[in-house]
Length: 195
Image (cartoon, rainbow, N blue to C red; front, top):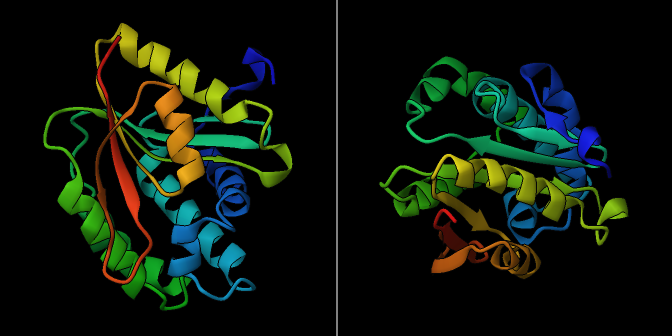
């Protein structure tokens, strides 16, 4: 992937981002727990990412998309997403066909471990399985981290698999703590100081 193939994602890219994420996270331990039926998982994961992208993460102009890769970024000091649940909670539940209990448990666990210090937040970075191992995720990550470093910002994320944790460690993230929603596989909270 060339640098020019990676571009800022907009709200109009919500479905494209959701399609990449649904493919990328099909075999992820957390998404296997969220949506246990592998036949339903692609549809539900795509619906979840389309809603979150359209109404939260793509609204800030900081997320990136390229062929077979996408990264959702949230800048520091973004207002609370509580309005999303008030305005779109029923639509979200309908899109997930009522399968929101585990999503809620995961969200609560993530919120409980989210840092209070200002930081850039990476809720998701995904590469389609057919394109994994070619460095696409690392390229996207390096591009955004360079911008964040230039601005003097810290970054935070939760790795949902051992493989993704290794990628993030290569890019300067350090483990803060391991945590899990009740009954879920572990996640790893990771922090990166500016360089």
